[in-house]
Image (cartoon, rainbow, N blue to C red; front, side, top):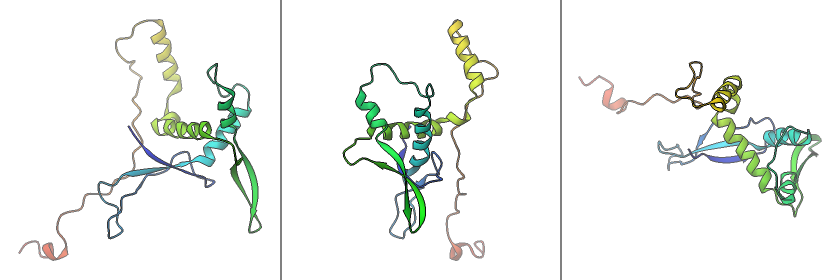
Amino acid sequence: RVLAIKGQSQPGKGPIGRPVKVDISLRGVPTKQSALLWPVGSSYIKGWLMGRVRTAGMVHFPAGLPDEYFAQLTAERLVTKHVKGMPRREWVKAPSARNEALDASVYAYAAAVYAGLKRANWAALKRRAAQVESGPVDAPPADAVPIPPPRFPVAPARRPGGFVKGWNNGR
């Protein structure tokens, strides 16, 4: 499954928001076949990720990653700027620094949240992993419940025709 995403650095945005239709007709109305663009709360995820990176043992990395990866992962820092007398926190990157590893990690976390990371039944998954490690398994356990993808409300289908065609029910 492929998602079109767009990072948004506004504070208070969740990891992944509601999709918006991006193809607009000449009348300014989204078309039925419009692509969906999913907003990603990059500020929220960067704060979550940096909090875990700073705490020892909270994020595990494979052995052999180059130092450049960690330099990219920590290329941005949270600073407080005052705009019109009000403090505003935002992530700022050094002018010559690269941050592709940080961006990829942010988008990977958003994809994991979309796939059901926060709705997963971790106790059932651990039991299932222990069963798999102990030997071959033919069928899923009885308590295994599939996690459906997130659903968003869908507008009801419109009836064909308009007021002029159906105002007197065809009489």
